[in-house]
Length: 190
Image: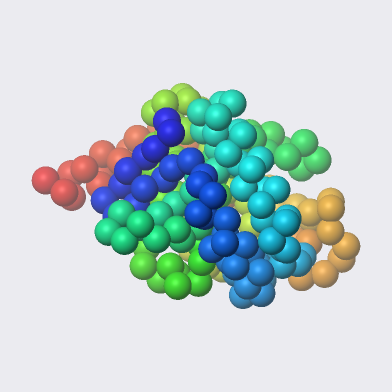
């Protein structure tokens, strides 16, 4: 699974050429608005190297995302096991895109590809997504992917002090719901 293709995107392994736009994206306060801080170039490089190592080791993880038509790096998407310090277990889907890529449906398209890997290749029974309670854009993507939220799953991030970023929400989708939605989308294309 070194590369996945959607209609408009390529989800792929990380390249050295991704590092500058990745670092710029992580230094953007608007992109990082739902995280405690922006990242330095060095922090960004460490994370990209870790993402690539996971892809090489497992065959799945956080893929770099590029636009097929232009080859432009626009962020990342993928799947990763939930951190050990959270009050639940499982595999999480996620995405983060540069601001110029917002509003084009790329996060939803990339998220669908990640969910397909999780359900069709990894045979996961469920995939979840986590974000801050204030990150309405990401929650909208989760709903477009068919994920649902149960407020009973909401939690406070144990790594953060009290403040607007600490309350988090959890969205989930089962393999059965994913299959049903995929069949509906296939029917719409016919």
